[in-house]
Image 1 (tube, rainbow, N blue to C red):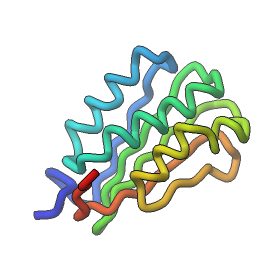
Image 2 (tube, rainbow, N blue to C red):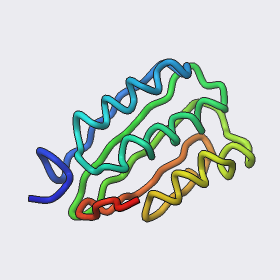
Image 3 (cartoon, rainbow, N blue to C red):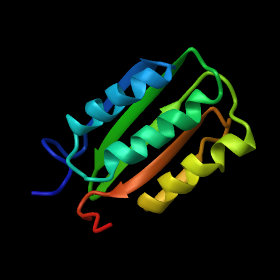
Length: 120
C-alpha cells in the first residue's frame, strides 16, 4: 500500500479561520488523512504563508492521485512576493518535490511524492 493513507485519488477541502492558533488544527487535519511524514509540516508552512495575506479564512485542499500528494492553501487576498518566497516557502520547498504560487497569487501549493519517506 502506498503512503497516502486510506484512499488514492481523493480530495479533501476545509476552510480554517485565518488565525495562528488554527495551525495546529491544520496539522491534525492533514495527519488524519495522509501518512506522509512531511505532509503536516508542509501544510503548516503553506497555511502560515497565506495567513500573511490577511484573508479572513484559509481554504486548505489535500489531494492524492497516483504517487502524489498535493497540498494547497488559498486565501481571498493576493500575497506579496516576500510572503510567497520567504522563510516558510524555503522550508516548504525543501520538503516538497515541487512548490509554487497560484496564478492569481492568492494561494500556494506543494507536491509530495506519496511513496517517499523522509530521512531528515
